[in-house]
Amino acid sequence: MEIPLLRGVVLAVTLLAVPAMGEEAPSFGQWIELRSYRNFKCLEILSSLAHNGAHAGVWGCHGGANQKWSLVGEEIRSDMHNKCLEILDSGQHNGAHVGLWDCHGGANQKWYWDGNFIRSRLNNKCLEILSSINADGAHVGVWDCHGGSNQRWY
Image (cartoon, rainbow, N blue to C red; front, side):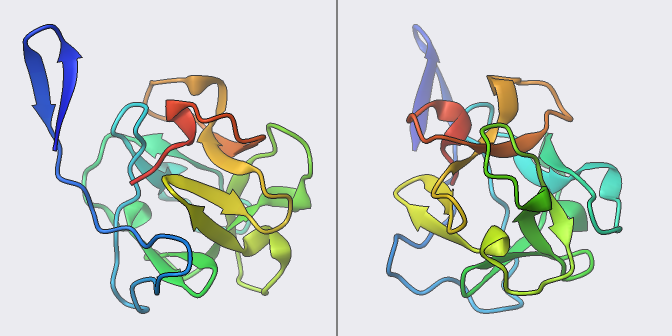
C-alpha cells in the first residue's frame, strides 16, 4: 500500500493482517506489531518495564519484545512477560491511560477490532495516542471514538 505524504512523495507501507470484528485472531505465540496510522509508530510498553501498571505508548518500530503483541481471545498480551494490555485503574473517562497488568479477565483487559479501531469492552472507547502526539514516548489511552488517525491501528 502506498500512502501519499506530500505532492509527489509516497511512503510504501506493508500492512499486517489484522482480524476484522468476528474473525479469528492469530493464535497465542503468533506475535505481531500494532502500528498507528497517525505516525506509523509501534504500540509498546514504554522503557520495556515489566511491572504491573507500566504504561503503554508508541515508539519507532524496532522489533523489540516490548513492541510485540499476541491477540488471545479478547486479550492483547505482551511478548515480554505475557501480561495483558488494560485500561489502568479501570478508568471510564476520556484520557484514561493504558498499560500492563497480570491477566485477570476483567472488562478493562478486553478489546475488539472495529475496522481499524481497537475498542475496549469496558466502555467501547477507542485505543488512541493521547493528544495526537507524534513523538516517541507518547502515551496511549482511551477516548470516545472520533475517527482520527491517532485512533486507527494496523
